[in-house]
Image 1 (cartoon, rainbow, N blue to C red):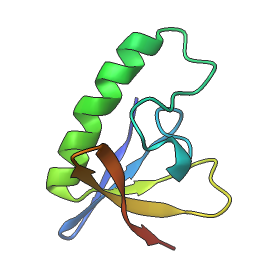
Image 2: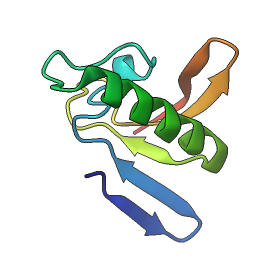
Image 3: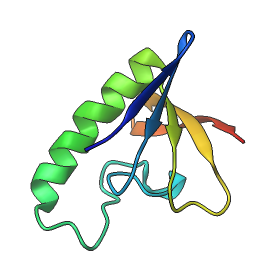
Length: 85
């Protein structure tokens, strides 16, 4: 479950364990504790494409250095476009 929080024209998304840190944004960076890594990989790609198009602000639960980020989709896949505090 991933909570979406709408505030005005912005949507904040609490990433929980799907993407626990900004370092986990690349598609192949999955958490070691995923029981179904192929499913997680597929769902993560679908979500990040949507997040890039809709400019969601992703809130990372476990990241010491990056509280939030907006992602963009590049020819190499997703990456942090902008990091926010």
